[in-house]
Length: 252
Image (tube, rainbow, N blue to C red; front, side, top):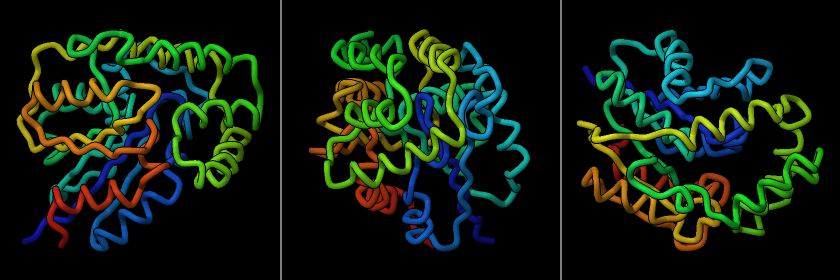
């Protein structure tokens, strides 16, 4: 019996499922028989009123409850994670190696492999320090200018991000807690024993592309770089990601 592909999608720092925009629909079109489940990081999305854990390990434990509720024995589980979600993914694969069959990691970084100012560029840190001074649309525009390089998508994405912020605003406390958890995360000597695909943005202005390259070398995983997209690769070039996933995973 052919197993059903089941994609699990994790977003990044203070982002939630709705920030994927139309990417899940594009992925569904490419894999029409697959199931797609998005899981929000505690402290954001449907959990925006809850305190975000101060460690990646605790984030995994909380998010795994959703996985266990939605996973079927017949599923071929595929993990797709971006940025902070990629750190959660690594810890998950380390703690529960049996949960997933393949993983795609996008613009992520790990302490112990890359330095702090590769993991968060100094210019990006200075940019983010202004976020608490802003509100509403101005705040979302400020963040989007850092993570998106494709101006043709800017207005559409900004309208979406503003609507999300109004509906489920992430608190400053949870922002700081997520930053701390990500910044302190160390991967150690772990190497996952499943097929891994690394996707990255060469012109990422938030996290150095050197981080993804270092992961690819350490784990002997294939890596593909988009030449112009920003840190939010799924927002700038969703079709490109889908094509790379199709090349990596056979379509039913």
